[in-house]
Image (cartoon, rainbow, N blue to C red; front, side, top):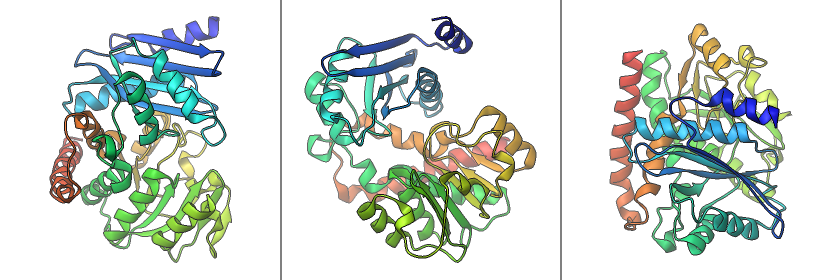
Length: 345
């Protein structure tokens, strides 16, 4: 109890958190954490993360990140986040998600969405239970954000603008993707369309590295079929943590928080960090990157414009043939936002 008290007090300030809720339901074996950080701008919104090692500290920091992102994007929402302690690959996911939804029924100042370990189908179960969720499937009026790769597109757009500030040409730039999942593989694809060359990718099974380049479509197909990137023929097979020391121009951390830290930040050779995950670097690591002159594109630049999509999903469904113009508009918004940040800095 003393450790928990210290942890909460270490992070409390004038912004929040407004509520920290721990949940346990014996029948379903649900163990979950919900942090509603701040509701000054409106009800909090944030993803439901599922992992067997998710912690209260992680959930709180993600909720605070959502508070700041939503405010920076001018959205009428506060920040929240939830974590379900379970292995998404082996658990009875539907049972846990429905139990979680029932547990938050009365917490109306929190709107759940998908996150690592959960998806649009999970949000459909939440919607069926309590009528309150974003990130819904197309059939329920949602925008297929993972299908169209909204976050990956935002990252590629930000990279295009940020290159101007580190004397880097995106065409021919060597890219390493840490966490080749929903965000990572779309980012790789959109960056490749702009001429970048994927040289490394990692997932929980390890890292594949080929300095001559990796075919993104082939890697994505093998990842979908085999479940890990190291099944790709050719190239070097390394540990997943080895990706941070590989020779590349752009590093995209797209998995867990704090993957860039004091222990590996000085191994990084990239000239640009393109944050595809929530809070992928510790504060100390970000200070070191700044001192080294490495461009560090924050997660709110590439991810928050994706977040603005789900908040509008429940009102109407946007036809797929209208996504092209919306992508062009979102690119202008992201580009202007990131350019303003760089010029201000």
